[in-house]
Length: 259
Ligand SMILES: NC(=O)c1ccc[n+]([C@@H]2O[C@H](COP(=O)([O-])OP(=O)(O)OC[C@H]3O[C@@H](n4cnc5c(N)ncnc54)[C@H](OP(=O)(O)O)[C@@H]3O)[C@@H](O)[C@H]2O)c1
Image (cartoon, rainbow, N blue to C red; front, side):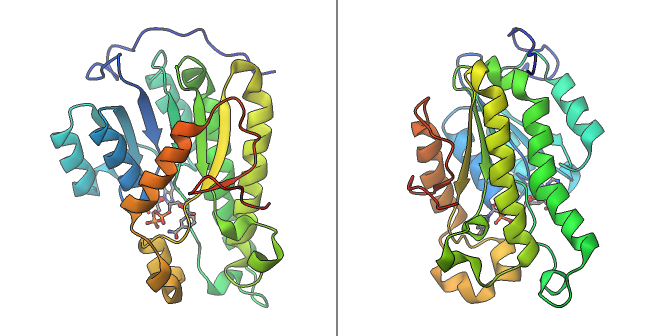
């Protein structure tokens, strides 16, 4: 059983610009792609936004978002830096986080996860970022989420992690494995955190025109939607999550993703 700290008022130093009447969201990998679209989406809704990125100093778009919306805070976080995860969770001790979005992820080098040249180092790198990072973040921020009103942890999965026969063939071997493992990691987290009323969900965005898709699956680009469209759809699914959620991965339209 995970023991969680009691809810406390906003921490003075880190959340002083936040409006206690508004919900708070934390997003990983928020400097570009879907992560940035999530940050922008919740900023426009007036939420307090903790927008994390590996490199705050090089993210001009995030800096501009924080300039425009006073309740956007940009924080440094590499999801494979476990000491850094703990340090950020400690820095925000006492801040209720309503929605925690594990968005950061990599596809990985295609050649190093192609059948016939499977590279163990690539396997470990992909799984550290796509699986263990989200799990450690869910663990580290569970008390913050438990102290909130919405109590939701959402990880961005993929149809590539589905075992549905029509989805298994094609694509990166390790990437698909990592997203299936992410789904299980979040089922485990959900089982641990259910007693605190925390809803732990996985949602797939569909095909989205981000750097990841352009670099690794360019042939799919004509069928992809914009990050803003995908995030608007996923945010509606997040809004709709309640205690009836069964833990099954969802597509961006709310339908069940076979897994
Ligand atoms: N695009 C799609 O069609 C699609 C489909 C299914 C699922 N997804 C999932 O959606 C999520 C977002 O993908 P995207 O399409 O927006 O990809 P993207 O444009 O490539 O962005 C990936 C983000 O993850 C961050 N990131 C990578 N490694 C990190 C680390 N170790 N620590 C912290 N951040 C890290 C990147 O930061 P840097 O800029 O520092 O590298 C970037 O912000 C991923 O989980 C992906 O698997 C995407």
